[in-house]
Length: 149
Image 1: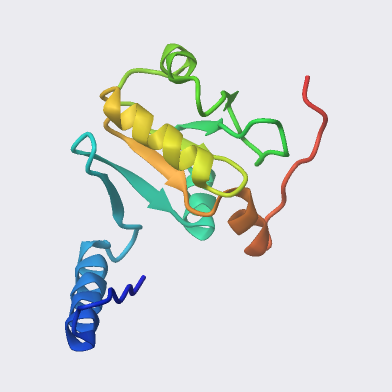
Image 2: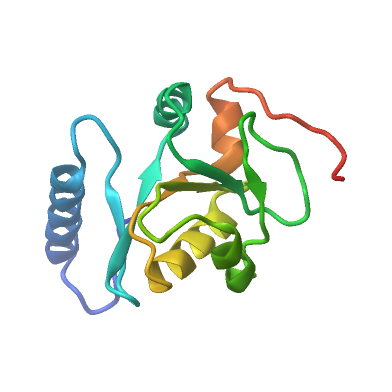
C-alpha cells in the first residue's frame, strides 16, 4: 500500500513503495506464500492462498481450525472449531507447538489474530488462509453451510 505523507517528497514515497514490493517479492518462495512477520513477538506465520490450501488438503498433514465466531460456514476437512479470541482454548485443544496448524475464518482477520496469538504462545508452524472463506469461495471452492451443533 502506497502512502504519501504531507511534507514528504513523492519520489521518496515511490522509491519506498518499490523497495517494499521488491522485498515482498524476494521473501516469497517460488512454490509457496510469503511469511507474515509478527513484529510484536518476533515470530512468523505463513499466509497461504486458497489454491495452495487445496494442494495442502490433498495431502493433509496438519490440524485444520476454523476460528470464526459466530459460525458462518466451514471448509471440508476442518478438524476443530475454536474461537479466535480464546487463546487458552486454542492452546489447550491444539497439538504440540511444532505441529503444523492451518487457521481460517470468514475474511482472514480473525485467523490472522489467532495466528499472531499462537506465534506469541510459541507455536512454530502456523499457517493462515489469506482472505479466509471469502477468498476460498472467490476461487470457486465450496463452503459447507450447516447449523452449528
